[in-house]
Length: 458
Image (cartoon, rainbow, N blue to C red; front, side, top):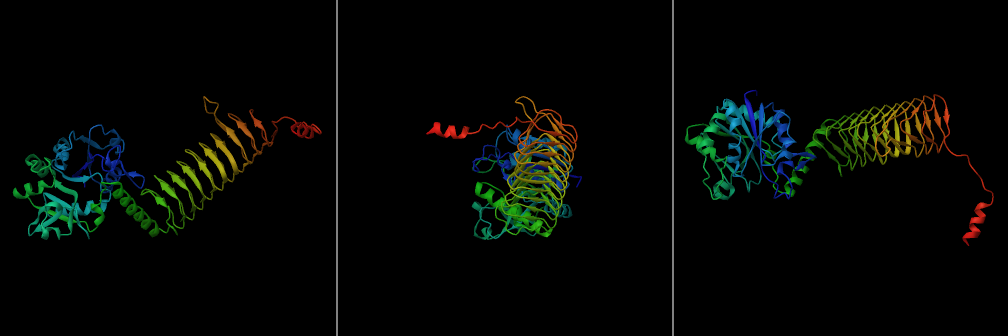
């Protein structure tokens, strides 16, 4: 595939989607459609890629792999005009084969790209249309074949009854010899009522010049699917969701009820893990085997070891080692490492911290910017006060410590190994190993004072 390149058309606006930016930024399973398409190219080992964007399309460019070239379509004058906008890229790669793709068609997968390319090369085609046979071809361009390959792509509105009966349709993706494509683009004219340059017209130009044109049936109707409305986008999400489920079922993941479960395409889950309703897994999340995730958990770019239980918990860009239990109603914010055997209960928040092995924080605790050792016990209501309004500071807690209920650790402080803090203490100094810190005022009891208060109240 080193003699290949690709041009992805991504200059379309999101007007019909009621989107503020480009249509290709609308998401399927939390990932912009343009990233699906770029990922499919990368998976097929396509060489250089150029994405055709509209004016002021920095938002699209931010979603592209760093090595991706771009070309700007100053005016939206059809698909042929969009490809013309990448002429400099095509000239540089004129001795290669070029794949033209639509930036809002996420399901033309790498294996289809490769098989279509093999077909293209075997037939020595100047142009190979990627097609699919569908149950209802209404609204799509029909592939019209003859003995020499494909003789036309007829749009639905222009088709006669015989042509309308054809169920093989154009996906919008094509392989070309780049030199032949450049030749056809030079001859392309806006010979239609819209005054636009249609890429499909290159088929007739190439045929008239003696080039061979054919179509490759992908054998998968999903390759033609794109999104022109929010309803279309919802349909793409539903299809992608089921595709992910099918993969995970094959890999031994248990999803007994799929209600509210949404799992991104890059997520990896180990065999024996159970995903419960209302769970959302996003980004590059990786989960080990024999875990229970959910109900109601959200994990984004998280790494979870084997044998973990995560219930009703948010975890973002953090690591849980093996045999961690967390939740319900807890949050692990970015840049945390929760070590083996840790138990975190309800209403606990951890941020930018390391929690050592077999440490317990059962409930109502905030641990921020903290390096915590092993076998520590956090009582109810503990808070690490890590921010003074201007700066954030870090605290250290040693192994085998006991942090009493309602303790406030005012960072930066260091609690030595085996040290205790008494319930209700506000700790502002370092505590030596095996010491007990009592930082509260002595109790004062006023006999009968409550009775006098009640009499005054009456």
